[in-house]
Image 1 (cartoon, rainbow, N blue to C red):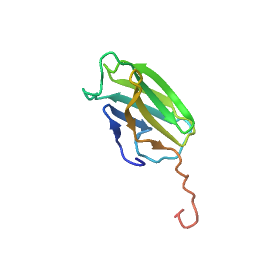
Image 2: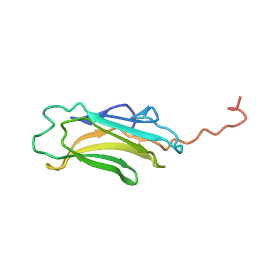
Image 3: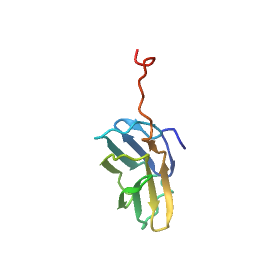
Amino acid sequence: MYAGDYAVGGIGVKMMIDGHPMGSEIEYKDGMKLTVRIGDYFPHTIREGCAYELQIITDKGVAYSSRFSAKEPQAVSLEVQKRNFYRVIVKNITAGTRVSVSNPIWLDKEPEVKTEETAE
């Protein structure tokens, strides 16, 4: 799951950093915004009476976490910090299981170095 705009599991995940979708490899810049939307719940995935948690994780740990009922779509926007990647995990915390895992957005792309040959 290094590249590609998809999530594995029973909940749809849409994640972008400044227009770059999951699976992208981009260079970090100050002021970048991460947007996440989850929804499109697969009916057999969501269980009545269970609590769910949306986590946005990085190589440094959890960047954001919130609990929800999985009855309505969820949306989050965060300022991006200098990390290697961002990824979404949705958990059924009542059952202790993962429900959906997104492909990451990689922020470890090396900046392009201009040389005399590439400057033209």
